[in-house]
Amino acid sequence: MMMLYGAGEVQIETVSFGKEKPRVEGHDEGAWAQNRRDEIIYVGID
Image (cartoon, rainbow, N blue to C red; front, side, top):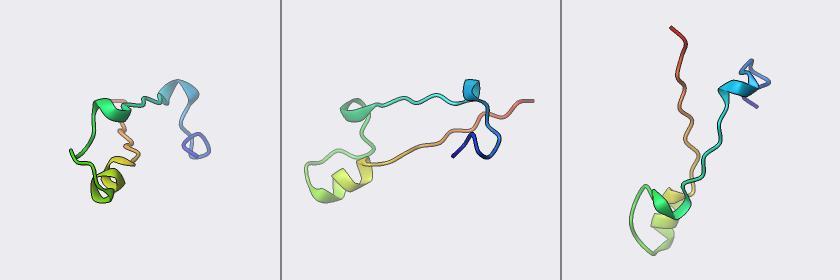
């Protein structure tokens, strides 16, 4: 989708943190729901 909006392939990187960097700690559905996420970080060109 990002490439359809004009991002180049060299501008996109996919990184999976999985269990290493959870947003919240916990072992219930609420914690799991918050940890199922995508984060898009845009670093513009100056």
